Length: 366
Image 1 (cartoon, one colour):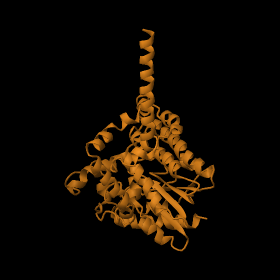
Image 2: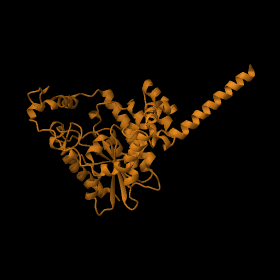
Image 3: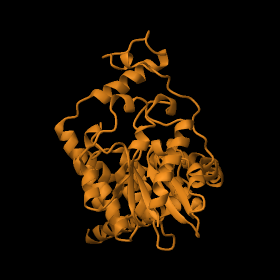
Image 4: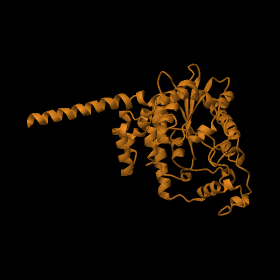
Protein backbone atom coordinates (compact mmCIF):
# COMPACT_ATOMS: atom_id res chain seq x y z
CA UNK A 1 0.00 0.00 0.00
CA UNK A 2 2.79 2.40 0.95
CA UNK A 3 4.61 1.60 -2.29
CA UNK A 4 1.44 2.31 -4.30
CA UNK A 5 0.96 5.64 -2.57
CA UNK A 6 4.55 6.60 -3.23
CA UNK A 7 4.14 5.63 -6.88
CA UNK A 8 0.93 7.66 -7.15
CA UNK A 9 2.55 10.64 -5.44
CA UNK A 10 5.54 10.44 -7.79
CA UNK A 11 3.23 10.31 -10.81
CA UNK A 12 1.31 13.37 -9.62
CA UNK A 13 4.52 15.31 -9.01
CA UNK A 14 5.86 14.29 -12.42
CA UNK A 15 2.62 15.40 -14.07
CA UNK A 16 2.71 18.75 -12.32
CA UNK A 17 6.33 19.28 -13.33
CA UNK A 18 5.47 18.48 -16.94
CA UNK A 19 2.55 20.93 -16.85
CA UNK A 20 4.76 23.59 -15.24
CA UNK A 21 7.41 23.06 -17.92
CA UNK A 22 4.85 23.34 -20.72
CA UNK A 23 3.37 26.41 -19.06
CA UNK A 24 6.80 28.04 -18.80
CA UNK A 25 7.80 27.24 -22.37
CA UNK A 26 4.51 28.23 -23.96
CA UNK A 27 3.05 31.03 -21.88
CA UNK A 28 5.86 32.65 -19.89
CA UNK A 29 7.80 33.45 -23.04
CA UNK A 30 6.76 34.74 -26.47
CA UNK A 31 6.89 31.20 -27.87
CA UNK A 32 3.11 30.78 -28.05
CA UNK A 33 2.04 34.41 -28.18
CA UNK A 34 4.13 34.96 -31.29
CA UNK A 35 1.38 33.04 -33.10
CA UNK A 36 -1.67 34.08 -31.13
CA UNK A 37 -4.64 35.24 -33.23
CA UNK A 38 -3.56 38.76 -34.32
CA UNK A 39 -7.13 40.11 -34.24
CA UNK A 40 -7.66 39.04 -30.61
CA UNK A 41 -7.05 41.08 -27.46
CA UNK A 42 -3.77 39.31 -26.75
CA UNK A 43 -2.86 39.61 -30.42
CA UNK A 44 -3.32 43.38 -30.39
CA UNK A 45 -0.78 43.61 -27.57
CA UNK A 46 1.73 41.58 -29.54
CA UNK A 47 1.15 43.73 -32.63
CA UNK A 48 1.77 46.87 -30.60
CA UNK A 49 5.12 45.45 -29.56
CA UNK A 50 5.82 44.78 -33.23
CA UNK A 51 4.94 48.38 -34.12
CA UNK A 52 7.45 49.65 -31.60
CA UNK A 53 10.12 47.25 -32.85
CA UNK A 54 9.64 48.17 -36.50
CA UNK A 55 9.20 51.92 -36.04
CA UNK A 56 11.99 52.54 -33.54
CA UNK A 57 14.86 54.54 -35.01
CA UNK A 58 18.26 54.18 -33.36
CA UNK A 59 19.48 57.68 -34.23
CA UNK A 60 16.26 59.52 -33.40
CA UNK A 61 14.57 60.72 -30.23
CA UNK A 62 11.79 58.16 -30.05
CA UNK A 63 8.49 59.25 -28.50
CA UNK A 64 5.63 56.78 -28.00
CA UNK A 65 1.99 57.90 -28.04
CA UNK A 66 -0.15 55.35 -26.22
CA UNK A 67 -3.90 54.99 -25.77
CA UNK A 68 -6.95 53.02 -26.86
CA UNK A 69 -8.86 52.94 -30.17
CA UNK A 70 -9.14 56.74 -30.08
CA UNK A 71 -5.38 56.93 -30.52
CA UNK A 72 -5.42 54.16 -33.12
CA UNK A 73 -7.94 56.14 -35.18
CA UNK A 74 -6.89 59.65 -34.23
CA UNK A 75 -3.09 59.71 -34.23
CA UNK A 76 -1.05 59.61 -37.45
CA UNK A 77 2.70 59.10 -36.90
CA UNK A 78 3.29 60.04 -40.53
CA UNK A 79 1.67 63.45 -39.97
CA UNK A 80 3.34 63.98 -36.59
CA UNK A 81 6.78 63.16 -37.99
CA UNK A 82 6.32 65.72 -40.75
CA UNK A 83 5.63 68.35 -38.08
CA UNK A 84 8.71 67.35 -36.09
CA UNK A 85 10.90 67.11 -39.19
CA UNK A 86 14.33 68.58 -38.53
CA UNK A 87 14.14 68.06 -34.76
CA UNK A 88 15.21 64.41 -34.86
CA UNK A 89 11.98 63.22 -33.22
CA UNK A 90 10.29 59.98 -34.22
CA UNK A 91 6.69 59.49 -33.06
CA UNK A 92 5.60 55.86 -32.58
CA UNK A 93 1.85 55.07 -32.36
CA UNK A 94 0.66 52.60 -29.73
CA UNK A 95 -3.12 52.73 -30.09
CA UNK A 96 -4.54 49.50 -28.64
CA UNK A 97 -8.35 49.33 -28.95
CA UNK A 98 -10.08 48.39 -25.73
CA UNK A 99 -7.09 48.92 -23.47
CA UNK A 100 -6.88 50.93 -20.26
CA UNK A 101 -4.18 52.68 -18.20
CA UNK A 102 -3.64 49.45 -16.26
CA UNK A 103 -2.67 47.67 -19.49
CA UNK A 104 -0.55 50.61 -20.69
CA UNK A 105 1.46 50.43 -17.48
CA UNK A 106 2.42 46.77 -17.93
CA UNK A 107 2.87 47.05 -21.68
CA UNK A 108 5.23 50.03 -21.46
CA UNK A 109 7.32 48.25 -18.83
CA UNK A 110 7.52 45.14 -21.01
CA UNK A 111 8.81 47.00 -24.10
CA UNK A 112 11.11 49.56 -22.47
CA UNK A 113 14.75 48.51 -22.64
CA UNK A 114 18.03 50.28 -21.85
CA UNK A 115 19.31 49.26 -25.29
CA UNK A 116 16.31 50.98 -26.89
CA UNK A 117 15.71 54.11 -24.81
CA UNK A 118 12.64 56.30 -25.18
CA UNK A 119 12.88 60.06 -25.14
CA UNK A 120 9.34 60.63 -23.84
CA UNK A 121 6.02 58.88 -23.26
CA UNK A 122 2.78 60.59 -24.31
CA UNK A 123 -0.29 59.06 -22.65
CA UNK A 124 -3.95 59.49 -23.52
CA UNK A 125 -6.66 60.47 -21.03
CA UNK A 126 -10.34 60.29 -21.93
CA UNK A 127 -10.76 63.51 -19.97
CA UNK A 128 -8.82 65.42 -17.35
CA UNK A 129 -12.02 65.48 -15.27
CA UNK A 130 -12.52 62.39 -13.08
CA UNK A 131 -16.28 63.00 -13.13
CA UNK A 132 -16.43 62.53 -16.92
CA UNK A 133 -15.64 58.81 -16.70
CA UNK A 134 -18.61 56.47 -17.18
CA UNK A 135 -17.17 53.18 -15.97
CA UNK A 136 -15.36 51.92 -12.90
CA UNK A 137 -12.28 50.28 -14.41
CA UNK A 138 -11.07 48.52 -11.24
CA UNK A 139 -12.81 45.22 -12.02
CA UNK A 140 -12.79 45.36 -15.81
CA UNK A 141 -12.27 41.68 -16.62
CA UNK A 142 -11.44 42.38 -20.29
CA UNK A 143 -8.09 43.62 -18.97
CA UNK A 144 -7.26 40.01 -18.10
CA UNK A 145 -7.38 39.00 -21.78
CA UNK A 146 -5.07 41.84 -22.77
CA UNK A 147 -2.66 40.94 -20.00
CA UNK A 148 -2.04 37.34 -21.04
CA UNK A 149 1.15 38.11 -23.05
CA UNK A 150 2.32 40.47 -20.29
CA UNK A 151 1.82 38.25 -17.23
CA UNK A 152 5.42 37.65 -16.23
CA UNK A 153 5.62 36.04 -12.77
CA UNK A 154 6.80 39.31 -11.21
CA UNK A 155 3.60 41.03 -12.41
CA UNK A 156 1.10 38.47 -11.17
CA UNK A 157 0.63 39.46 -7.49
CA UNK A 158 0.20 43.16 -8.18
CA UNK A 159 -2.08 42.55 -11.17
CA UNK A 160 -4.35 40.12 -9.32
CA UNK A 161 -4.59 42.38 -6.28
CA UNK A 162 -5.55 45.34 -8.47
CA UNK A 163 -9.01 43.79 -8.87
CA UNK A 164 -11.21 44.62 -5.91
CA UNK A 165 -14.25 42.39 -6.46
CA UNK A 166 -13.92 38.73 -5.48
CA UNK A 167 -15.23 37.43 -8.82
CA UNK A 168 -12.86 39.57 -10.90
CA UNK A 169 -9.89 38.83 -8.64
CA UNK A 170 -10.58 35.09 -8.80
CA UNK A 171 -10.79 35.23 -12.57
CA UNK A 172 -7.50 37.13 -12.77
CA UNK A 173 -5.80 34.63 -10.45
CA UNK A 174 -7.13 31.67 -12.45
CA UNK A 175 -5.85 33.18 -15.72
CA UNK A 176 -2.45 33.88 -14.18
CA UNK A 177 -2.14 30.39 -12.66
CA UNK A 178 -3.64 28.49 -15.60
CA UNK A 179 -2.92 30.42 -18.80
CA UNK A 180 -3.67 27.37 -20.94
CA UNK A 181 -7.22 27.44 -19.60
CA UNK A 182 -7.56 31.18 -20.23
CA UNK A 183 -6.25 30.73 -23.79
CA UNK A 184 -8.11 27.50 -24.58
CA UNK A 185 -10.27 28.98 -27.36
CA UNK A 186 -7.24 30.39 -29.15
CA UNK A 187 -5.28 27.18 -28.64
CA UNK A 188 -8.16 25.14 -30.09
CA UNK A 189 -8.41 27.42 -33.12
CA UNK A 190 -4.65 27.21 -33.65
CA UNK A 191 -4.61 23.40 -33.46
CA UNK A 192 -7.50 23.16 -35.92
CA UNK A 193 -5.60 25.12 -38.60
CA UNK A 194 -1.99 25.71 -37.52
CA UNK A 195 -0.62 26.46 -41.00
CA UNK A 196 -3.42 28.93 -41.70
CA UNK A 197 -2.77 30.72 -38.38
CA UNK A 198 0.98 30.86 -38.95
CA UNK A 199 0.48 32.28 -42.45
CA UNK A 200 -1.97 34.90 -41.14
CA UNK A 201 0.37 35.99 -38.35
CA UNK A 202 3.34 36.16 -40.71
CA UNK A 203 1.31 38.37 -43.06
CA UNK A 204 0.47 40.70 -40.19
CA UNK A 205 4.09 40.83 -39.07
CA UNK A 206 5.23 41.64 -42.61
CA UNK A 207 2.67 44.34 -43.45
CA UNK A 208 0.73 45.58 -40.42
CA UNK A 209 3.14 48.23 -39.20
CA UNK A 210 3.63 49.77 -42.66
CA UNK A 211 -0.09 49.85 -43.40
CA UNK A 212 -0.79 51.44 -40.03
CA UNK A 213 1.82 54.15 -40.61
CA UNK A 214 0.13 55.22 -43.83
CA UNK A 215 -3.47 54.69 -42.61
CA UNK A 216 -5.48 57.81 -43.61
CA UNK A 217 -8.48 57.39 -41.31
CA UNK A 218 -12.22 57.25 -42.00
CA UNK A 219 -13.52 59.79 -44.54
CA UNK A 220 -17.09 59.87 -43.10
CA UNK A 221 -18.23 62.62 -40.75
CA UNK A 222 -21.02 63.32 -38.27
CA UNK A 223 -23.53 65.83 -39.73
CA UNK A 224 -23.99 69.24 -38.15
CA UNK A 225 -27.04 69.54 -35.90
CA UNK A 226 -28.73 72.66 -34.47
CA UNK A 227 -28.24 73.43 -30.79
CA UNK A 228 -32.01 73.21 -30.35
CA UNK A 229 -31.95 69.52 -31.27
CA UNK A 230 -28.98 68.79 -29.02
CA UNK A 231 -30.85 70.36 -26.09
CA UNK A 232 -33.88 68.07 -26.40
CA UNK A 233 -34.37 65.29 -23.82
CA UNK A 234 -34.73 62.78 -26.67
CA UNK A 235 -34.06 63.18 -30.39
CA UNK A 236 -36.66 61.41 -32.56
CA UNK A 237 -36.46 60.00 -36.08
CA UNK A 238 -37.70 63.20 -37.73
CA UNK A 239 -34.87 65.35 -36.37
CA UNK A 240 -31.73 63.50 -37.54
CA UNK A 241 -30.67 60.80 -40.01
CA UNK A 242 -32.23 57.47 -38.90
CA UNK A 243 -28.90 55.71 -38.46
CA UNK A 244 -27.73 58.56 -36.22
CA UNK A 245 -30.65 58.84 -33.81
CA UNK A 246 -29.83 55.91 -31.51
CA UNK A 247 -26.10 56.64 -31.14
CA UNK A 248 -26.83 60.36 -30.77
CA UNK A 249 -29.28 59.79 -27.92
CA UNK A 250 -26.76 57.49 -26.20
CA UNK A 251 -24.05 60.12 -26.61
CA UNK A 252 -26.21 62.93 -25.22
CA UNK A 253 -27.39 60.76 -22.35
CA UNK A 254 -23.82 60.00 -21.36
CA UNK A 255 -22.91 63.69 -21.39
CA UNK A 256 -25.86 64.55 -19.14
CA UNK A 257 -25.60 61.56 -16.82
CA UNK A 258 -24.70 62.51 -13.27
CA UNK A 259 -21.87 60.37 -11.97
CA UNK A 260 -22.25 58.94 -8.45
CA UNK A 261 -19.72 60.25 -5.96
CA UNK A 262 -18.51 56.68 -5.45
CA UNK A 263 -17.65 56.35 -9.17
CA UNK A 264 -15.82 59.69 -9.22
CA UNK A 265 -13.79 58.68 -6.16
CA UNK A 266 -13.03 55.23 -7.62
CA UNK A 267 -11.89 56.87 -10.87
CA UNK A 268 -9.64 59.26 -8.98
CA UNK A 269 -8.03 56.41 -7.06
CA UNK A 270 -7.65 54.27 -10.18
CA UNK A 271 -5.98 57.08 -12.13
CA UNK A 272 -3.73 57.99 -9.25
CA UNK A 273 -2.52 54.39 -9.17
CA UNK A 274 -2.05 53.60 -12.86
CA UNK A 275 -0.99 56.95 -14.31
CA UNK A 276 1.11 57.30 -11.18
CA UNK A 277 2.87 53.98 -11.76
CA UNK A 278 3.60 54.85 -15.38
CA UNK A 279 5.00 58.21 -14.29
CA UNK A 280 7.03 56.77 -11.40
CA UNK A 281 8.60 54.11 -13.61
CA UNK A 282 9.73 56.52 -16.31
CA UNK A 283 10.56 59.38 -13.94
CA UNK A 284 13.14 57.11 -12.27
CA UNK A 285 14.85 56.85 -15.68
CA UNK A 286 14.67 60.56 -16.47
CA UNK A 287 12.01 60.03 -19.16
CA UNK A 288 9.19 62.62 -19.09
CA UNK A 289 5.55 61.57 -19.23
CA UNK A 290 3.08 63.88 -20.97
CA UNK A 291 -0.68 63.36 -20.66
CA UNK A 292 -3.14 64.72 -23.22
CA UNK A 293 -6.92 64.85 -23.32
CA UNK A 294 -8.16 63.14 -26.47
CA UNK A 295 -10.99 64.99 -28.29
CA UNK A 296 -14.01 63.70 -26.41
CA UNK A 297 -16.82 63.79 -28.96
CA UNK A 298 -18.38 65.71 -31.86
CA UNK A 299 -20.52 68.05 -29.74
CA UNK A 300 -18.44 68.36 -26.57
CA UNK A 301 -17.04 71.75 -27.54
CA UNK A 302 -20.56 73.15 -27.82
CA UNK A 303 -22.21 71.30 -24.94
CA UNK A 304 -19.37 70.94 -22.40
CA UNK A 305 -16.56 73.30 -23.35
CA UNK A 306 -13.07 73.47 -21.91
CA UNK A 307 -13.66 73.63 -18.18
CA UNK A 308 -10.96 73.74 -15.55
CA UNK A 309 -11.02 70.59 -13.47
CA UNK A 310 -9.41 69.06 -10.43
CA UNK A 311 -8.66 65.40 -10.03
CA UNK A 312 -6.04 62.69 -9.99
CA UNK A 313 -4.18 63.92 -13.07
CA UNK A 314 -4.03 67.48 -11.77
CA UNK A 315 -2.61 66.18 -8.49
CA UNK A 316 0.03 64.12 -10.30
CA UNK A 317 0.96 67.19 -12.34
CA UNK A 318 1.34 69.35 -9.21
CA UNK A 319 3.56 66.69 -7.68
CA UNK A 320 5.79 66.84 -10.77
CA UNK A 321 5.07 63.27 -11.87
CA UNK A 322 3.43 64.12 -15.20
CA UNK A 323 2.98 67.12 -17.47
CA UNK A 324 -0.58 67.83 -18.58
CA UNK A 325 -0.76 69.21 -22.10
CA UNK A 326 -2.97 72.17 -22.89
CA UNK A 327 -6.50 70.95 -23.61
CA UNK A 328 -7.67 73.95 -25.69
CA UNK A 329 -6.21 72.86 -29.07
CA UNK A 330 -7.93 69.49 -28.72
CA UNK A 331 -11.25 70.86 -27.47
CA UNK A 332 -11.31 72.94 -30.68
CA UNK A 333 -11.53 69.65 -32.58
CA UNK A 334 -14.66 68.53 -30.74
CA UNK A 335 -16.92 69.32 -33.69
CA UNK A 336 -18.90 67.04 -36.05
CA UNK A 337 -16.62 67.66 -39.03
CA UNK A 338 -13.76 65.88 -37.23
CA UNK A 339 -15.58 62.67 -36.12
CA UNK A 340 -16.84 59.62 -38.02
CA UNK A 341 -18.77 58.33 -34.99
CA UNK A 342 -19.43 59.66 -31.50
CA UNK A 343 -16.08 58.52 -30.14
CA UNK A 344 -13.46 58.46 -32.89
CA UNK A 345 -11.82 61.10 -35.05
CA UNK A 346 -12.16 60.81 -38.82
CA UNK A 347 -9.50 61.47 -41.47
CA UNK A 348 -9.72 65.26 -41.07
CA UNK A 349 -9.65 64.94 -37.30
CA UNK A 350 -6.72 62.52 -37.45
CA UNK A 351 -4.73 64.99 -39.52
CA UNK A 352 -5.55 67.99 -37.33
CA UNK A 353 -5.10 66.19 -34.01
CA UNK A 354 -1.74 64.69 -35.02
CA UNK A 355 -0.44 68.07 -36.19
CA UNK A 356 -1.51 69.74 -32.94
CA UNK A 357 -0.17 67.04 -30.66
CA UNK A 358 3.19 67.03 -32.44
CA UNK A 359 3.34 70.83 -32.41
CA UNK A 360 2.80 70.87 -28.63
CA UNK A 361 5.09 67.96 -27.76
CA UNK A 362 8.02 68.67 -30.09
CA UNK A 363 9.35 71.77 -28.22
CA UNK A 364 9.15 69.83 -24.93
CA UNK A 365 11.54 67.09 -26.10
CA UNK A 366 15.15 67.54 -25.13
